[in-house]
Length: 495
Image 1: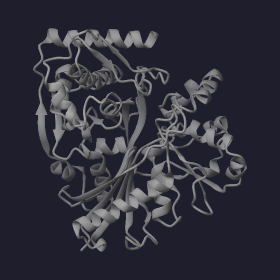
Image 2: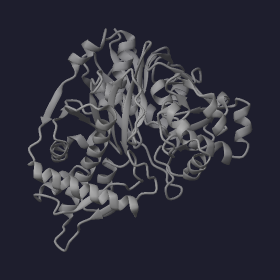
Image 3: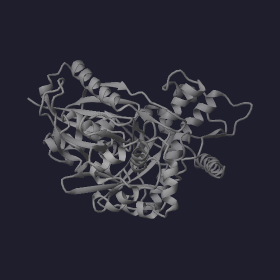
Image 4: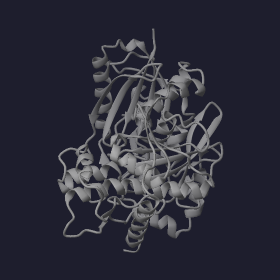
């Protein structure tokens, strides 16, 4: 009997694998940390071989933990950190360089040259994205223009490009499949989200040979079959591939237009389902492909805050004011408020809606009476206030009122943060029982394709709420927070 889904969630700081049953219950999970590589200030890399190793080790560990015969796995779903760029030799399957991570700023100069040449509006209209080092295209350009002989290899079709999903697919299928799904393709700055294909004009502008690009497929579908892995039987179908934030939107059962989720991970990402209508933002948001199931394409507006949970890690590792990330709630709760301290967590630049990769973090309002508890509380408030800015932009772009925000990711466990998030937004914040919704979304896509669930209605019934946070903050106090936040951000932008 094959009745389990293996969900691979390859993230920025770790790789997690879960076994999920038809009731969306997690039977077992295992994870391994992914080391970060910082060759220079602003540069971030991963070792592609370690990405594979953490994936394989996590699969082995979860099977051992569950005591499960791997033949009972019906299908595999993959979700992944997006935009992170890998080029590899098709003959050997070996990477030509480390993976360049989505957070990396090394291509600022390439972005500026493209802007100077007047291409910004063209990229925006075709891809729904802004010209920024965040996305894959300028990372590919840097690689093929920097590594000796690589451009020639690429032009000969000897090199393959992929985001992390493509890298995993290639190796899980013994090199048989070079593919990606529409959600990941839409994060490269090279995919036309209206025509749903690689854009020849953008490839010409960037000088990226089309030969290196993966085949683009629907999110739910057969991507290939396992082969020659040893720890998994051959011929297990890979039935779903999806970028992590789109996966979380689906995993939160945000199937209808107007539903919204926020994921609090390394960064924080808010997605607003716009159904089959791609809305080009006038307020600094991204238009992205959420998913494709059969012939139906669903789009989303996305706002990205580059630093969220990473701000708590900074409080732990950089400031040393807490020993563990989860300690920040206790410390922040020891004071009634932040004492007028405001923290803008732009430690890796500002993402949406400002798109200022040169921005730096800012703390204001410090006095002689400021303690580490006030700073801890300001860090949590800064995370939530970023979400406020993003949701305000979404309301402006769509003309729709947001009735509730679904939340997930590690920091959503922080009750103080979630209550403040509800207070500052003035709407309910809803946390699910399973906050690892990126894994859940990948499993849901794969299970839909495999026939484990017949439709979205059945999946919606499986989604379970843990807690709803409702706003209780007085209006005047809320206005004060927002006034201080907006003033501080304006100061940062002109600094």
